[in-house]
Image (cartoon, rainbow, N blue to C red):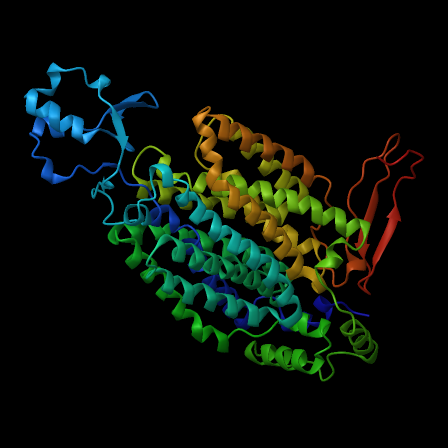
Length: 545
């Protein structure tokens, strides 16, 4: 019995249809680049100090001394959360014309009872300046980011299972609609609480449509194009969207207008519904053979190819009918010892990757220099990283490519602070590797659970740099150590280079194991029937660890 790649070989690898799908699905990922990272500008904290009411009738000299000076990271600057008691200042100013004639350190202080005044040098407004998310409320800024990532976590968990049950296309466009509609509503948020609720709903659709598009492209395109689609296609499109963010934010300095402009771009993708078909591979798994055959014949027509009169033989039809009666859910990711181990390892690797990636990306405003250039360079460094990922995946082992990138990225973090391109490379390769490890019946669910783990990491990432109050280098030491640990975890996963995509859980490759004594190395390969054959290379008398 032939596998899917053999059945569809007559379509060719790079015809007009494949080129169209490559371009359209890559284009659909573009908004994800700026939607997820817009909080860098929307939630940035402008320079601020306590507001001093104008009815105090203080001289300019006394107005300049109403805010105490504090030592902040080795620099002496005006306090952002405290001021001298205004009633005391008023009495002193009536007695002493020159504030330098008294010891101001002995004057009592008070919080900013009248609110704050914010610098307009960089922004007209942010959610911080509009809703006073500073001082005692400073936690609300990172919390708004975390709420977004909790939404993405929930979306990853739900959409993965929905996609495996109801189809890749429906869930991809459905989550794109969720992201676009609620992003537009978010621009009109009257307060922080409503903003957070809508931010959760935006997150619900944000990464979910990226994953659905990624899986749909992996199943529609041939194996020779799959790698370049997942790297040069979706990932670079994401990076270009990310690079566009600081350009738009530079000209639009008001957060509601910025969100609205970014959200409206999602409406441009509505026509794609009539050009992107459902995955025939998924339809066949679900037993919807006639629909799959109609799509395959349509693809052949667009490519100018005459399809065979009979696409599926009787044995293949019977096998598809039997498979369609099987239902799969998230439980199947833990059903066997092998898939359970793979799921747990991928969970940890994705979690660590995202803690580091978003922790460093969201730290852009804290870097030295211009925020817009910092954001642009953080995005631009991803493009060569994705090209490197494509080259690695074409020529080298998946395991050693990802492990090596993580190891180098983790070590680099101990010495320099900007985002290491190796981490971005590993992030891109992880998408490809995860999709290749899981079979079609649970592929979107498996990728979704991995993304759920990554969203757990991104949820806590805004708080990573709060460790800097104890030591400036502590966040980087922590992230570097975790990344090196994940590099070693990847080595336990099986290799997928030049291996056909598995269709069922039984066809998944086995996880690597270490043995005492002599090593037992098993080589797994797919037979023409799609089953996994095990060839014992070296017999082992040792005991498994």
